[in-house]
Amino acid sequence: QVQLQESGPGLVKPSETLSLTCTVSRGSVSSGDYYWGWIRQSPWKGLEWIGDISYRGRTNFNPSLKSRVTILLDTSKNQFSLRLSSVTAADTAVYYCARVAYGKDCDFWGQGTLVTVSS
Amino acid sequence: QSVLTQPPSVSAAPGQKVTISCSGSSSNIGDNFVSWYQQLPGTAPKLVIYDNDRRPSGIPDRFSGSKSGTSATLGITGLQTGDEADYYCGTWDSSLSTVIFGGGTKLTVL
Image (cartoon, rainbow over all chains, first blue to last red; front, side):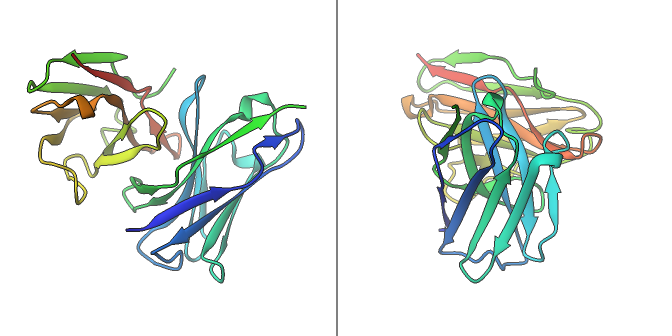
């Protein structure tokens, strides 16, 4: 089964950029059958879709976050990454990476990583 | 407040059946596939239903999904204590151009 693992800082200062990486194993980010996505979860907003990227680098973003989000694919490392700029306390959440089917269902998830925005 | 509406909680006894509803609109459930996720405490969500009514490999047939118009339903039969979790529906919203999720339903197996 495909496995995904998030990594990155657990603490980010306000106004700075949150950066996370998702490493995929037992599967390839170059697969044309799936997208690779980021989702976050907080007590105040529940599950929130951030965006996804295809093997060709085509991206889809949540319009509410689009101006601050970058998602990149690194096929050489079998990874994809998330960058969220100008963070505030409202961006504090557990961030998940996931494999996304064309029906937009997420069939495999990473374990999640808590990112806290605080000075 | 979520675009997709789920009851905050449901409960039933072991061995019984429970249904969880997810109400949306023509721009989301009415026009796109619905998926359902189970989230056990302290873990990531797990896909239990996709494309309205299909089960991923490894998900028991106690779990079922259906969709009618702008609403979807998750059914779980033969309830077990291990089914206690939060359940979320999700779908694409054609107007918002993003995936949206329901607010989640906490299932308690009494």
